[in-house]
Image (tube, rainbow, N blue to C red):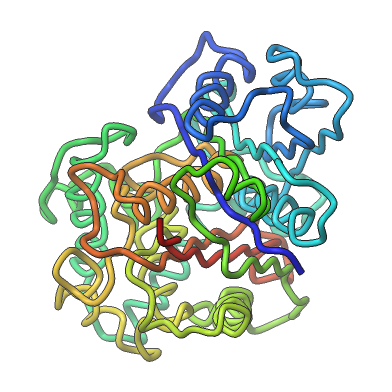
Length: 382
């Protein structure tokens, strides 16, 4: 198999762009990623576009504005994992030698729904009974507080860290620090989760250029190697499920580490799926950062921030940066590229050489999650 490299990356500031089209959101990110890579639109061999709510032919609607035509354009819907799945598919095509230059786009516009929780598929039996994502994560949080014997202030500290990191990120939707008291006193959403413990809805776009080793050498640009790319879908389990052991993430992380030939202790920087505060705590354990049962201490001891063992969500994560669903997985890859090439500015993780991104997608009755994508990235010596 051939190796695949990111040589250009860009995103727009996450926020609310109510008057913008999907093309209007994506084009600035795409143009800047192409410029960053030194690649002309006519050099692109294929396009993969991840989104959840863009409608038909989203990718084609975007790239036609650039004069990119006659190349294969694929559109990927895998809920929150759509953008990361697009990257996974592009990686496989580069690795198989099918293409040398692939443009990967992630984009979504959530302001089109006017607020509230995201619409879920009515055919799902749990959705028909009223299940929404904040409720699912709130149940997980209640179980966590009960089993681990900790208070809601531990959940609040996840938001405190996310906002502190996000304050350094000009692309984040929320850029101000908060206290644990402010988090706990914010509007109740679904007990024990409050407003500041839930990722904001909004709009956004991100893009990366994925190339073969031959193209990387020709371009001579800063590059990051994709050392592992894993996509799993959930296994059906009816009845009782351990809500604090998301098997789909455990399995994806295990396979990613095995593929890259490294372990959790080798990772310097992580962007993980913190759509709600409880998710970050659960995923510390699933990604192997600490043993099951130790995530609260791992957070409170400062092991997941600057000066700790690994910096988790230096971008501010979904809690601070925002979560425009289909864009998030690609935005994570952009952050990894910036971190591993020393371009992350005030939020730069010192001596970052290995990065991990993780995103899950969708809640479906009987499944832990509908999809999970884990990527491992390695710095390339110039």
